[in-house]
Image (cartoon, rainbow, N blue to C red; front, side):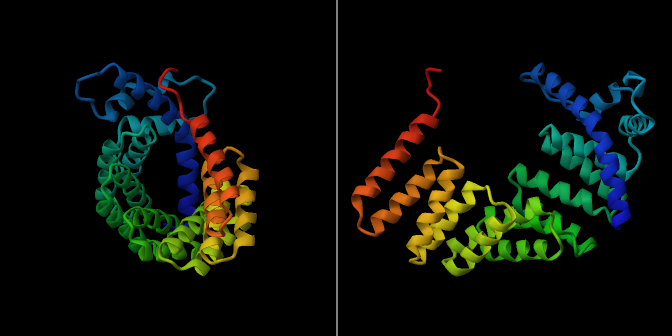
Length: 287
């Protein structure tokens, strides 16, 4: 899909957000009233939401989107319905409509990407990865599809494939919001593989893009600790705690570092603090 087409789609999907919000509300109400019964497909709700129900102040573009999802005919229409279903977490229905979209337009990489996300969220990782591959085959520079595929590979413990996918995503100019996450997860993958230097490099890249993520600093501390760089490890743990004083995992990690150095007193202090935070952040069954 060309950049012009992507811009057009971003505009259309943005407009559709208003309608999707209303659809989500209707769908939620419907679901709550259908206990023990089969849910109808989300299209029945969309069809019942006619354009004339919209306030007069809404512009013609919104009316056009409402008409399209009320009477779907094109691949774009089915994509919007799938997108609506995805947003209300009805992922099986979303898959159905993304499949309808790609049946009408076999080059619809965005539909394949969203289908992959939906498959992953229902635990069908093989189908998710296959969908991402189809999106990438259509558009070999589809950064977001590479990023999503990297997440799927990481969750199925295919770490080398995950790293490769994240590198491709970054190569093809993944937006910063996702780039930080890509470096973070890639760093975690390297750490699991025992490649501590590569983990540190990736995690430092993540902090350059997003300097306020306590979780990244905690993982970075572990990577430094595993590399025997204890000063840097403690600096990272302290930064994680500074950013999130209630982060029990950071205290626990720092306790392990002190323990490795033979400082059991400070280790116990950290473990105790971690325990207190865990108890504080665990909801009581009495409330």
